[in-house]
Length: 332
Image (cartoon, rainbow, N blue to C red):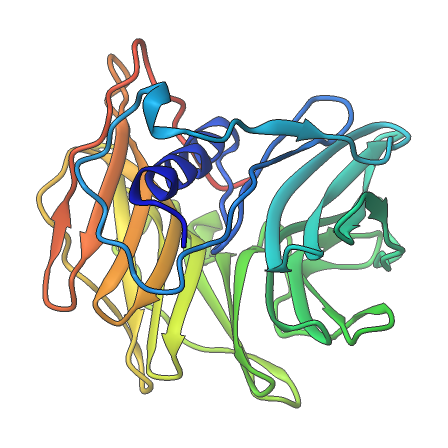
């Protein structure tokens, strides 16, 4: 089993990637370049039981095994990988997009234990087709989500891997300016995708879609604002225990947003008093061990933000304060 120090280091590096790019899917690390995508990898296995993390520390002694850059296939144009999911040490998927000639195409890459390779993925026939999130239940049941825009329509995008090829699955989201950021796969007939939609007069709304094994449907989810709002990440413990995080804006600024699905409805969860900010990543170890991460939005000195759910309460967890101002992760 991985040591406490090693696991602390691993999660801390995931968070650094989150702050750098603004995208983190459950069980995912993200890295981004302005030209070709690349991936960082660290040896070691994820603990088989929940690990209670101590106060977050940022020093090299906590990282016994260094990270290294792993080569990925070059792409024509400017590419980025936004989310990843690992089924095993020899079965890892990463998704994103490639900009070429003014448009964007989906980008999916796979790690087989020895190398990364690009896997063919469908586009929606328009100038923009992007993937932002990926989730998996098994090697033959993987979902990727994003958005598309063509001459006739625009909306959310969902793609599925059945073990042989990727295919586009029609979903319920349609309209310019809406997208899906993340996806959590619970069972073959229970998948949640979250993102942002459009309300009246161009205002933003939360967007939650559900796959029941046959079709995608939009499930109502609450919001706190008549201004911009959106969900950036989702994690599931069970069919009746699903968490989603994001942010909302009002006339004062941007604030963290957490919502929970109890098997019947989505509801907003009151968080500990924090400054303005946004939440961009979440991982659920168990019903009593859930972590969310993001950043405060004090533009004079923005800092990392971490909160933990123990099954009864959320609490802010102290984390290292980097020198300078942290990047504030926002939806694409």
